[in-house]
Image 1 (cartoon, one colour):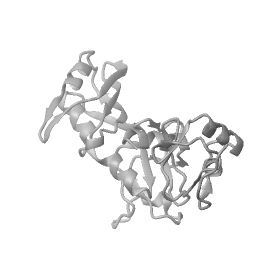
Image 2 (tube, one colour):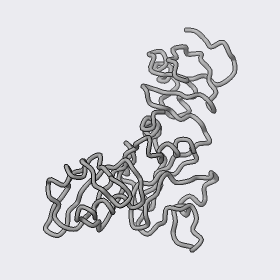
Image 3 (tube, helix red, strand yellow):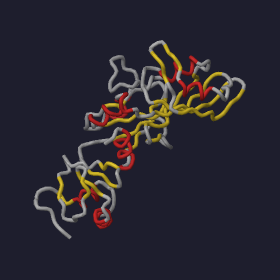
Image 4 (cartoon, helix red, strand yellow):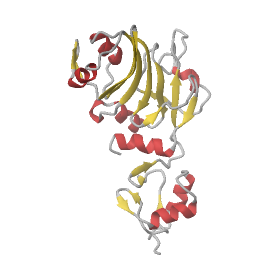
Length: 247
C-alpha cells in the first residue's frame, strides 16, 4: 500500500463512499482492483487524496459525480405543463415543481405543453449543454399514440430519413407496439430536438399524433415515476448521461 504525496484533499475511498458508490471498505477494494480512475489515470493507492470539487472520477469507466452542490432530477412532466422555469401568464410550468428548492435549477431540453414524460432538471450547466447540443447525438425515446393503422414498412422509411420543411430527419429506431384499425401505438427514438419534431415527423408520414410521452433520455428512463413527481437520479444514471456525451 502506498500513500499520496500530498496531505491535502479527501481520501478517495471516503469520497466514493460519500457519493454512494459503495461502502468505504468496498470502495477500497474497487481502488485496489484498478477499477477507479482520477483525471483519466487509474489509481490503486488507497491513500490517494483528491479534491471533490475538481477531480473527475470514473468507476468501471462510468463517471461518478462527487460534488455536493450539483443536483440531478427527473420529472415526469404532466400534459398541460409548460417547459419553462416561470410563466408570465401564470400557466402551470416546470418551475412550479422545484419552487421550494434552494438551487437555481434549469431544465434540459423542452417538451411542448401537450407532451408528457421525462424532463431532466439540474444545475450542472456543462452536462446540460452537452445533452442538448445536437453534435453529441443523445437519443430521446418517445411512445406515441397515432392515428391510423401503421404499416410494417414505416420503420424502414423513417430510418432512411424523411424530408421536412426545415430539413431531413432520421429516426434512430422505430418499433410498432400495437396496431388497431383507427390507431397505433409506436416507439420512436431520435437524437435531435427540433421543435415538435416527433409530431411533425409522424404527421408527415400520415400518422398524426394523438398522445405523446417521452420515456427516456439516453439510457435514463422514465420508469414508474408518476406524472407530476420528481426523483433524484442515481449515480449510475448520472454516469450514463456523462458517458452519452463522452464524459
